[in-house]
Amino acid sequence: MSEHTLIKNGSVFDGTGSAAAPAAVLISGEHITATGADAVTQAKSLNDVASFDATGMTVMPGLIDAHCHITFDEVSSNDELFFHRDRPGLAALIAGTNAKRVLQAGVTGMFDADGIFELGYDIRDAINAGVIEGPRMKTGGYALLTSVGGTAGGLVPDSGIIGYGKIVRTRDEIIIEVRRQIKAGTDWIKVHVTGLVPGQKKHGELQVWSDEELQTVCDAAHDLGIPVVGHCRGAIATRNCAKAGFDMILHATLMDDEALDAVVKANVPIVPTFTFQANLIDYGKLVGANEAIQDLFRREIDDSAGKLREAFDAGVPLLCGSESGFSVTPYGEWHWKELEVFVKNIGLSPEQALRSATYEGARVLDLEGEVGEIAAGKLADLIVIDGDPTKDVTILGHRDKFKMVMKGGRPVDLDDRLPPHGHISGWRVNDYGRIIDRDLVAENS
Ligand SMILES: [Zn+2]
Image 1: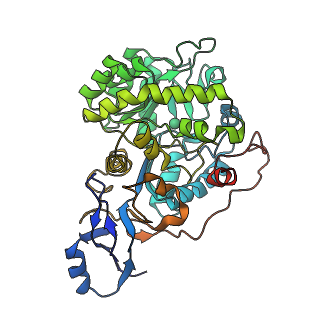
Image 2 (image 1 turned 90 degrees about the vertical axis):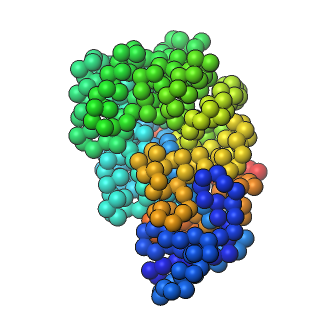
């Protein structure tokens, strides 16, 4: 590997939302050291410069996926997640290979909200130490659940640990668990703020925490300098989390005026994460999803888009998250899909959506000003893609258009593609169920 790389003749989208423009980019060591005419001039005075001709291509920051579950290994149900992903060593080994798939898809940074066996800490540290390949990563530990549960309804026990979650029943248990996770090395505290109450369908997910409990989590985490992220569906939970001081909100669907007002006042970043729903709407029939679910998801996106757009217009950062880790959202396949939703449904321009997926994402990695931008002094986390994503963001979904992925100045091997892993006894509930990957879509289009 050469010490320096000069990418020339390409167009640069710098991540800030400015229009792409022709420019060269010089990389030395881990960093971008110059762009534009400076890059060409400086390169002339250096030895050992690898030159990359990016004619017809766009250089842009690597994608930052603000909502992944790297330890779930493409589960198709809570059942599978809670009762079949029961081997921590195996789960960690598989997550290690999946992290590489994510990186090869041009994702140079990811936020893992919560994981089974709290493996996020180990995956993160293994990536940082170069033991395995993967994106820069920040992680949560176990999601905090009240005994009412989260989206898994009655499968959640009244106490203890299940899958990705830890049940906290009292103010004391909340504080003890927050402190334990922080000591164990968590980057974020994740709270499952809303849940499905069995027997209650009319109102969808309800806030299953009291406002006082939400405040307790925030106080306990913030006292030790750790941010808090909440899974919130519905206006009430979104409003109350913004008021309690949450640092990021996942989903924030169906906001009303009050929720919007609270979110704008707090300027709390939102990760809508519609990729899961969008994939089931677009491709669900290939895997036998029923139409009622597709309609429900379509309505959720349609009914949420307007307020999310208002939040964006008021300056609230919207981040791109894919919820990768489910059979609907396999690793390395759909990290770009949220950009399409941002453009098609929320009405952002491609440049705005690309900024959400790069520059804005730096905050989840606690690397603001260091990644998510093509500029001198930034870490060299970047993609070179054949074509112009500022005209059409969906080109980021074409594997063959990726000509270079670089993380910290090191090119990622894009030819060394891992096949899906084979059968492991008891690991999958349904070995005949299909995962919605792009091959399946291509076969049926
Ligand atoms: Zn999630």
